[in-house]
Amino acid sequence: MPQHVGIVACSAEGAALCYRTICGEGEQLLGEHGHPEVSMHGHSLAEYVRRIAAGDWRGVGELMLSSAEKLARAGADFLICPDNTIHQALPLVAQRWPLPWLHIAEVVADAAAGRGLRRLGLVGTRALVESEVYPEQLAARGLAWLRPEPAEREEIDRLIFGELVRGVLRPEAVARFQRVMQRMKEAGCDGVVLGCTEIPLLMNDGNSPLPTLDSTRLLARAALRRAVRAPPGAA
Image 1 (cartoon, rainbow, N blue to C red):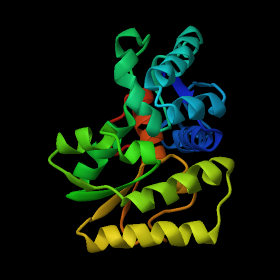
Image 2 (image 1 turned 120 degrees about the vertical axis):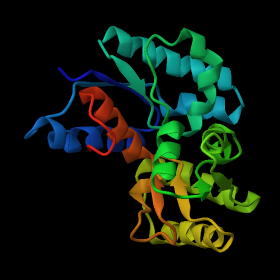
Image 3 (image 1 turned 45 degrees about the vertical axis):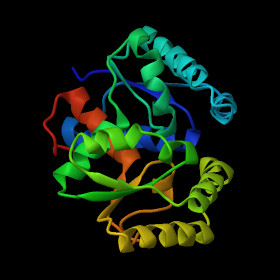
């Protein structure tokens, strides 16, 4: 039997895309309409945003831990979180996790290395791109990275929290991301990490100046493979 996937949700849009990907692509491994058992729990996004704004990462970790414990009681075998930013809190509560964890930045870094990429642009919330969540994992695989400029970080952060988490997708936002990614390309990047799980709703290989690493779907596919114990590349 496939393992039971537990999703620690933060924003509705990112969590929904992750869930839909697991279920929609599950039949490639499990037959028509097949997918693993999935449970999801999420606290109010406002509770996360309030703690992030205050720099209260231990408080963020406690919210994640609360969801993890509920998912463990629901029977999940392992956990994922389709939110890049709050992965900063994982080390603060790591000793108390009730279940194994699949780390989004590790999944993305492995995918980048597997595709032969060498230098990646990072886009996401200001808190994410100023953190070491991705640099630690990329450096461990010999990969370089480039963060957005300070003004770009602020604009992207505004777009994420003001629009993308609400499912608002505007051409003007596409153009803004394209300008940032083009600058990264000109600076020597050969790929870009969509390091916010809502960005893939807006940006993809078809409209990005750089090849994209879709953190949301990469995590969902890794969870799907783990659940059915399939080798890499199977989904």
